[in-house]
Image 1 (tube, one colour):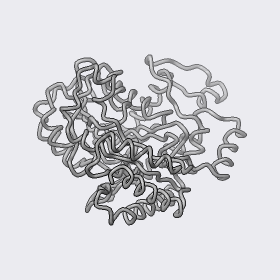
Image 2 (cartoon, one colour):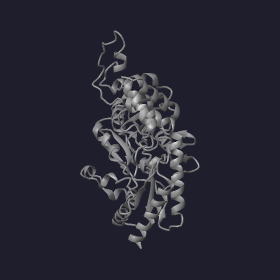
Image 3 (cartoon, helix red, strand yellow):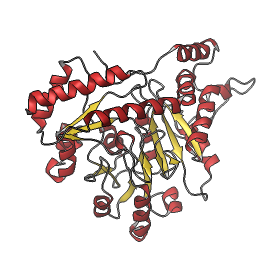
Image 4 (tube, helix red, strand yellow):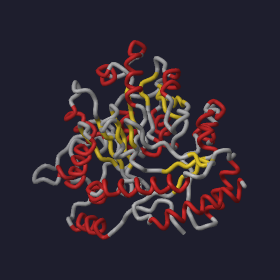
Length: 401
């Protein structure tokens, strides 16, 4: 069976994680701090705080920014449930919008229509690793500054709607040469096991606010917030005579460990190698489906934007949802694993029961109903890529004729 997205665990990773274990320091420590610095250097943002998941990081960020009951956060209807769940957990309302016809990202025009005086943040989601149109989003929030009603000191200082990127998929993606992590005011990455860069579980909060913000102070504040509001972490308390600490606020508990960071440092060091291989797999898929009239290949590179080659979202022209499902089963029957990214939120019980209606998001349904995600990972061989292509073609022929 060709798996869908196994992590790249080789001897180098094993050696680095083993070294972290043998060091005697396995929670947040020097490796985590080094990982944060290297992420900042790679992405070009101003400061980075590593956490134990995207979800935990985004919940901390919403709380820190002062988003809560009565507020609204705009996000696409086409995303993983975590994007909406963290907003609900904050007490705010997720305001869902439809997608662009040409890609899987949120429509800026739909965002424009969804803005109200209660809008505190826009959460663009870089689906499959292809960046949203951040220039258009910044132009939009500047154009509606007069509607903005700040609810916290940070919001007042910014003076407009926050651009809060869900970049769970897009580590390494670029817009005009700038990397994801430096494209939005604040960005949250996921380093889950299936991501291009994995720490098994993990994430990072990247801050890139205007220069008027004190990013050094923000780093310290977020480090306190992710450790129960404690004024010193375990490494600081381990110093001779430095045991006493204070608790500054009732914070969260979501710090990254040095075991996770050890894995992440290896992944980051060889990240370009990883992306190059993924890019080649995309090229082979494109070539393999070029002569198929039913194949709608994904948009992943334009004059100014380039994906990080996280997911290859193939669509089957003319297929219904049930036909797509049958095609997937026929692919599985040939020992090839595929997936769907994503089920739009309004078709899921948690959101349907809150009043969201799939009929309000026709483009999201259009994308979902005939989409199949193909395997892409470093260790996928050229021969396996050709096996995937053959399996997809055979399955489409079997179901669609």
